[in-house]
Length: 329
Image (cartoon, rainbow, N blue to C red; front, side):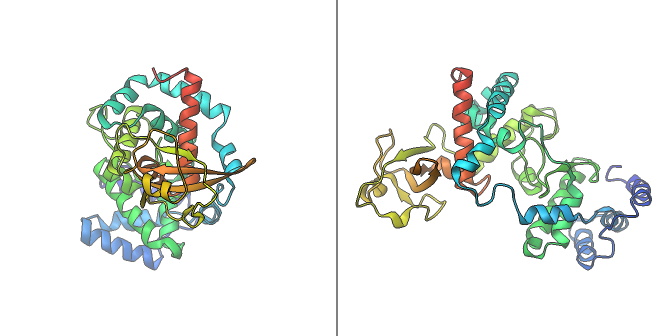
């Protein structure tokens, strides 16, 4: 079933086989969405109406999005999820198998190989867990049955149908996370359309089975979100007794500079310049609170997932993978 007239016949077979599951064919929002897609993007109305009938509401998705597994964990617990022997050795193996593509991506985009590897490791265990939900079901469920974020996921469903039509992919076949994220790097459909690249030049952008495209796409995403070649990511700091603790964890955005943070009682001995954008954050370790200065490239990692804990997990996993490889070469 591609985006052709053959989609109608194929969907009819699917619907007869899955009649016991609730689709979105009678959902008022889904019908309005079909009207929009026909008017705005010239989709075939009959095909889309059948597709909405086939797009199943999944209660498991609604439960999952209300309680993300990593939510509200202290750093020392969150860290254990991602900094594991399996992810470290898996990262070494992924790097060794894809060394040429990683080197090419680093040269082109300026994003270190270990950061690309760590993102893919955190997101999908190097492609081992890309998600088991049909992307169509995930996005339709969250667009039409989850009012709090309906606007966001309706837009993602729009982007998903556009990308599958552009790529001539059957929209009922792709699988991803409960939120509709896809491929090695878990791109949402809008991110795929904006940042995924045909890194190996084979004429197709494939982040599901092509590690070269996945690697280039992660690197391109970083650059498009402000990654600076050769700059550090985060450096540790020890607050002075008179430090202004009100600015700790105040914003993901690096709205201060290293020099301003030093003046506020957060010095560092690392090789950074005083004019670098920065913020200060704390991590809850088993030995007490630890303080870090997050720089521009740390902020860029949070554009992938808006969480300091996520960004630090990626950063630390990258460093552990380098150690396990015996260096970057």
